[in-house]
Image (cartoon, rainbow, N blue to C red):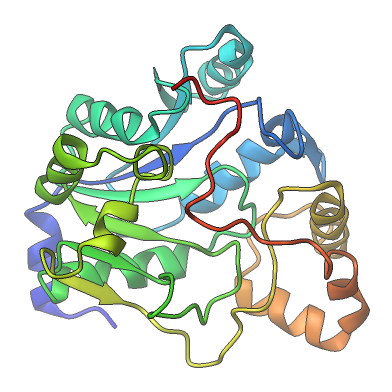
Length: 265
């Protein structure tokens, strides 16, 4: 819920969402540019994210690899802000983007989550600002928990916290997955977990495999190719048609400590 205090605090900060995107995905190459209801998946993500009211800007952060020239070209065509950086040191990619766009607060999102919800983004940003947290998220690894569906993942941190992680993180998974330094050093940071009222953490709404893509295409087809539906409308749909969730029920979700085997060490 918005309050005058929240509004006042938000006006003092520059909140920038950074969406990481690249074409060389290990399990579903080129997924961010694949068609989803008549638009590239990256466009679906961007248009949903841009509806969040707590954001002052949205940036696509892709890599300097020539394979990602197409992502930059799409962003230029659609008028999206885009920056490029390291392929595997994604933490550095985020840090450099945050500096370039003078972010006080960074919202980490990924381009393979085309059901990302603006209200969930706003709630997570508000939770970070209201509690003066260094890092807030709507899902964290054990001993914390996930109550939102996989695919609504939203992580928010201050620039100061991101800079600390950028300077000190020295493990490959900490560099590749951006935020694990916070998970693994909770004694050093004020961390806020944002829970859903329902326990929906077993639902998988991200795109990492052909099965995931099949599910998301069915969902977008149900909504007639629109992208302004809410995550609660999707929940209502899969509750009415539980067979939809069987499409990708056997997909194994990656552990956050896994790193790309193609990483150059």
